[in-house]
Length: 388
Image 1 (cartoon, rainbow, N blue to C red):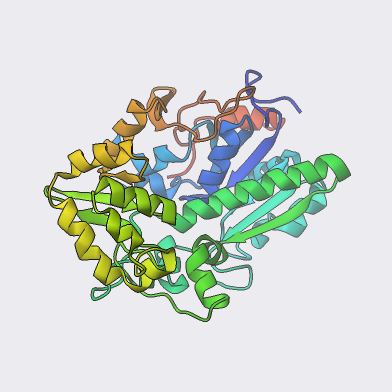
Image 2: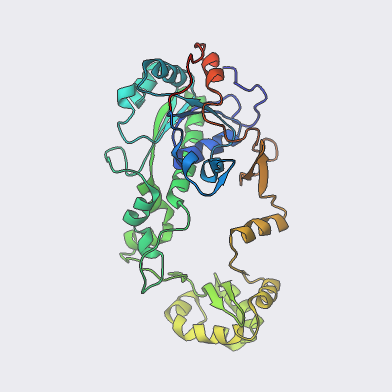
């Protein structure tokens, strides 16, 4: 199957992805696949992906939210209720290696694009359905709803304050990542057996898996975790601590690190105190330990302690804003910002020595590739522009 762009490179070069998803979980998944060389054809309704219009902030009139998760893709506008556009959608689904959508469960059936219909015309297809709460639920899959209903918000915020959402749509992103893993596994299975299959992911299941130790506390230990602010359920210190000027995140993940911390703070006797000598003891007696640490930390600024503790091999760090985080990555040589076309974008975090991620295409304008996709499918170009 020829690619729309014969210059595509990467480990997934030659794989065609029909992307019927929008907003975040699906587009994040398909962007990861596109970065690795897949030919991703983004199918949008006449109004375009919602995130094109989620502003501010914007760049050249387009929401930066959209720009964040749609590089390396082609855009075609299809009104699935229009018979001629439905024909294009069916032709695309017949030629794609991977079909991804995040319509509500059952939402594509009336267009002949559900799993049964697509796999009937394309038996080898990898069909990935992303939902909020599973294939049997009609609940809308917004990340905020899942953060609340999964229990995450009950864990976020101060112990005496209200629950808070995470600063990012964490379960959308993680569902997209899990979907990409599922697609890659299914492609390998198809290479071995020739069989396509149906992958299903949902935000709620992702949430419960992503909350790892907190959910395990309940299912394995019958403990319902509670909000603890920046504190950790099972480790202390593992939180920002006040210094003489500003806060510094200080971590002692094991007894050896705690001993080094006490030595650097010049309170070595604290590490020998039986109340604090082990992880469990420190957790049981954290309110007795906290003032001993704060007393010493108050003698220097956060920046000074950052230098001292880092030199002693103790995990610690300041609390940056987003600019500070990007600048830190730059200082560490991680080159966090690359350009996809003329759009600055955040580098794919995967480093590969032989087949690195690509950044060939800027996030596409709406229907930028509609006629090219139709020609590639052997269909006539659109006779009129996409309806508004």
